[in-house]
Length: 294
Image: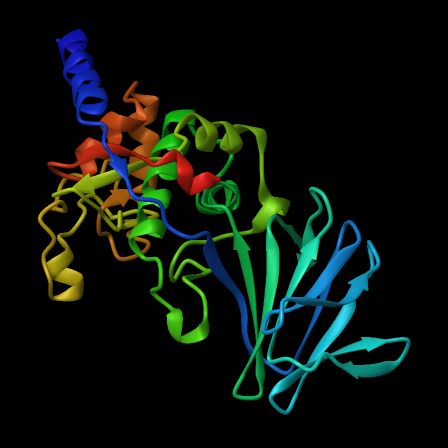
């Protein structure tokens, strides 16, 4: 019986594999509505005026700099003085494979700093797979089962891509908090969770040929709930099912995958695809077009 179940799963995954059109890199809001931020980089990093695309300054490695809103512009503090960068938006691009730093963490990709109505917004722009390397260990303990990590990676990738532009008002796609998805940058990466991201490279959940926002929460208290119970709108791929989270007190909205339930199912021998097909009904698996990552 288990062999037949796995065979049916294999057919579902690989016969139904399709290609989704590529999209732009993801933008994650790290800080919103502050007067100043302290930023740095592991390597030399260029500050680019986003309006002219010209380099205006080079940051020294392993040093923090204060950036401050000044009217509608952005200033940088160097040797005790503030210098006007003459733009309401800048990008900080580290040389080579360097990292950028903020909030006592390292991040892949680049930083974008925007002056929005006199306050600064800090954005981390990076490749979706690099982003996921900082999401999975933030959303699940690295000690949990590998198949649970893999299910989390696929669910998080689907949620992110289905919600591109969600917070466009602020110039980014998602927050770095559980309000969207917890994200701790490169500082939180682990070998175990990196492997789950790499082994599920580009795979997403689709329904009716569209990527779904694969909602999940820490635990559902014994039963997941339908979307309509929470957001007044039912979703055809989400229904109430036993959550297999050992009746752990509900933590979160309870819609979609229970993270504790996913880990318990993994302990019972379920693989990531079986876990996801259990929590999300009538979904298929698709792989993102390779050109997305180029």
